Image (cartoon, rainbow, N blue to C red):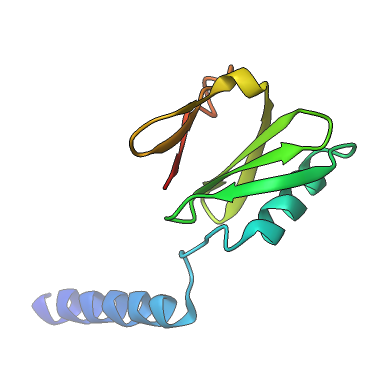
Length: 112
């Protein structure tokens, strides 16, 4: 029984090491171009302008050319997006806080 437990633990460690080597589970919003593309893909008539990317790559703010604001955040390996009014943004010592009306999406902190 101890041998079986040890083998199982070794297999788990090997698989988690392989996943780390392949970069699985490390999704990021890498740059402004990616953030703009994600915002435009999420909202058909959204025309992306300036983008602010969080230093941790987990969130971004994309200003639309029509005055609207898209907030992006990682949801697992995918990017989730919501449109918010510009008044939903507030600057804090840590970055920009975005309040959404969607309780499941929650507030987002775009870190400096």
